[in-house]
Image 1 (tube, rainbow, N blue to C red):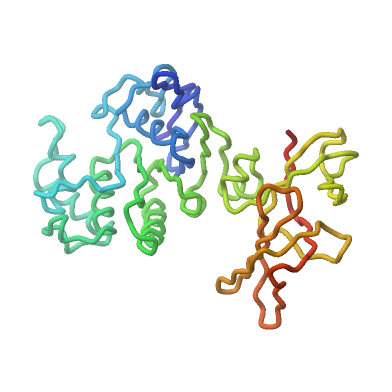
Image 2 (image 1 turned 90 degrees about the vertical axis):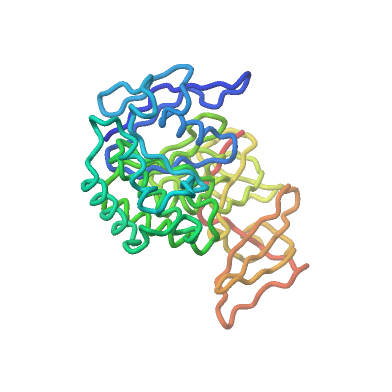
Length: 347
């Protein structure tokens, strides 16, 4: 089912939770809504579900205008962060709940419901646990059951609100990879909300980055990470260094040091250079910015230097490969650094 969000707006008093949001989701896509708290991602998900009515704009499921349809009429599947399973019902009864709650005219018979429940138990790889109750399950198993319950009604759209937020790190990684495989099996149009950038980049076909109720960028994970459309997206996605400087004559200078880095602007203006820690290199004196080593941290095969460049507000990070013969600069020493791949945004 295609989903079309057209100029959707939602305000709370003087705050614009959603500010004329436009988004098209193709049938079978897995799309992540990514942003910090207050960016509008959960509000958008709840508008799509029918849990909130927008102040203006339209929502279409395929060619059908669903803007004023109720939650039941929209037939969406919704999965919450904290499972929301019925404790007094078995796993099988939880999965069957949506089907058994349908009006009599649309309700499948008992045999059909039982068959559908078993199909879903097999799909979520818990075929023998139908008779158990939620308190007898692990967190990861509970979330699989919650997904099966949402899928049981054959939803037009599957909506997931921070689905892995209540799980520990190891289970979260395992479950999101399982969800990706499940999505590839079912082809279900899916939107999920997350503030975890790694989760969004690993799991989604496309990522929607939101800020203050507006969409900053929509793109594939590679596009979002490698070609951020704004300084905000660059700083929000992944680890980023920010170097304040000036552009002049198509080059960037920092504290009087001409880096001879090509930039788009030929006019004299303040600018910020954004660069990933692994996209910086140690160079010879005179070829980069002088920096004082504040600390060096090793994690597995990576050494991260924390560096202080004169006149910069934030320390910089530089990643080195920890080879057996690598010499790590000592804290207090001076090194010279140069960005290799970067983006410059003018003020």
